[in-house]
Image (tube, rainbow, N blue to C red; front, side):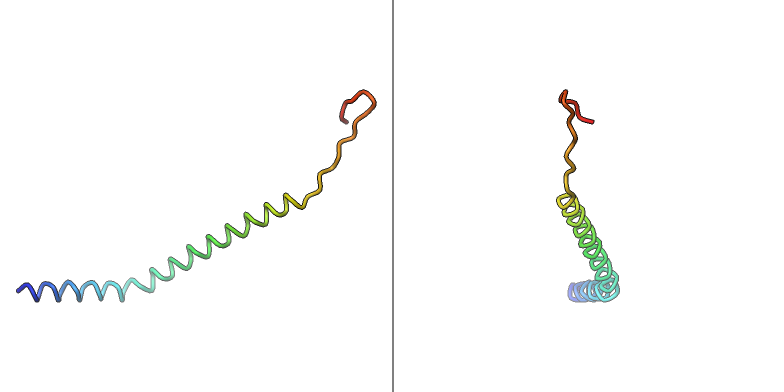
Length: 66
């Protein structure tokens, strides 16, 4: 009787893997794709901030900025 329970459990696990593997693979691909997009966007923002020239402020004779 123990062999039947073990075989049915193994069959259930294999069946579940076959059924849910494509959905799990798609979910992992979507998560990785979103992570890459977020990382690339963050890097682009940092680079744009670094590349933006700093405009000097004009200071009059009294030392006040305009």
